[in-house]
Length: 395
Ligand code: SAH
Image 1 (tube, rainbow, N blue to C red):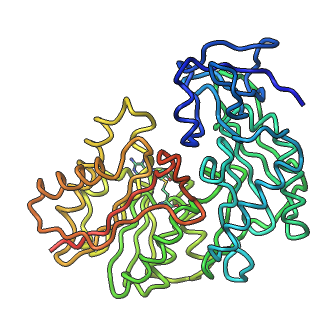
Image 2: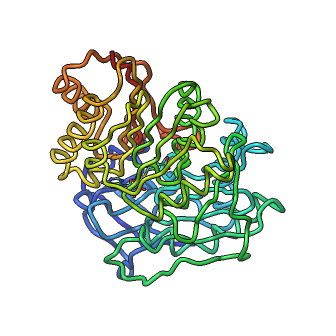
Image 3: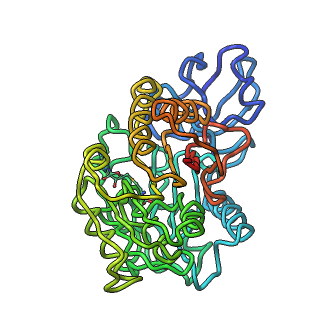
């Protein structure tokens, strides 16, 4: 099989020598063959004609996302091998083959050598999300490979890329099933049940990336009054309740999220009076709240979607956390997160340090948290690290 060809400028092959999976548009000297269409598979050559890689071409500052550094055709067997490799990692991590847990991320983009592709598993349903036109073009091949890899345990594949595909590509893609059309919409995480709304929910329906951090909350919850701010599905709330919290309040500005949190709590702890949920703005709630919480969780949406928004995002994190530091009870525990990829660990820690200093409280770092093992980071692509969290003891 021959692909269209991209020739790099002299010296611009260096990052590929370090297996970095992106080629920026400025590195390209010229293209050969027919006119490129977004999503095309391309072969990348150095200025002196050496083969370097094969990837998906896209319009934007990242021009090619690399699929392989070997000269090999991108066929059914390629997708099967990549998915099988990803599944092997999940077996090694211990998130598969369990009766108490059937929610996990099978493919995490660059972290699984499949840039632009996310696949999440919820029981017998897989949700595929494409972030590049190239992966979109290949979606049926990927779905077929998924069926081969997962076999009978898979009953349906939902494709949820309406909001993640590049807007300018104007694909008009709607969400829908690629295969099967049902799938149970209750799935299990560490023995707790959750309604997963892959049809309309955020991301692929659930924030799988907080699984390990939710378990840690469970360990700290006993006897505490817990505020789960930005609760969405109520994941942290349900774990806190199992951990023996005295009271759990879930807050989200979205009324739909609040209903979902209530439904998930009811699924696990029917008629449990310890829980209440409020649809309110976080800043307003923190200003007005009367309850004396001694465990507060702050898991806001990404404040910075791009590097250009970094300054504002850091001010946002500082303002939010300062309010929590001011209000939390002495001896309280604050779990605080940032899922903005543009905000790195050091930026985030500085924002929290500033918030602590504003409040004047004595603060110790107990844990430094990150994304779980089924959201792996390729050592060649440190940009893949996005979720950061701190667990703080506030004297
Ligand atoms: N902690 C959740 C994920 C949080 S996602 C989990 O574990 O699943 C971020 C949530 O913040 C969204 O549900 C969104 O509706 C909510 N949100 C966004 N802005 C908000 C605001 N100003 N106040 C309260 N909630 C907000």
